[in-house]
Length: 79
Image (tube, rainbow, N blue to C red; front, side, top):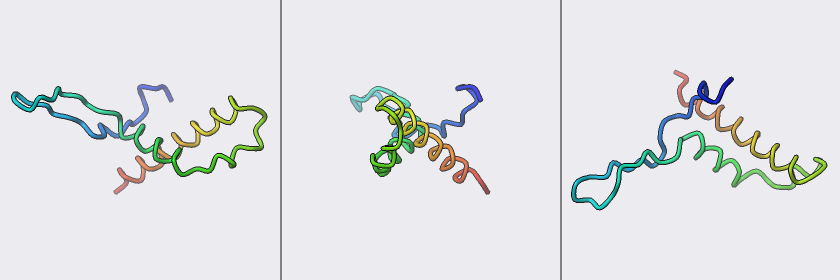
């Protein structure tokens, strides 16, 4: 699946801005990125101790976070 084929779930925390609001329009981060960040916050770092080095641990952690985020988006859109 290419990066363009991924369902990002739309925007999380968009800001519409407005004439006199002092805010600029901004789409915010994607909902997928927000969900992945929430997963990172709760997955214990010790879960990755079996991997050989820090780079492998970080890559596994990130992949896990986005796998869970994708599952959350799929569950959210299931009817």
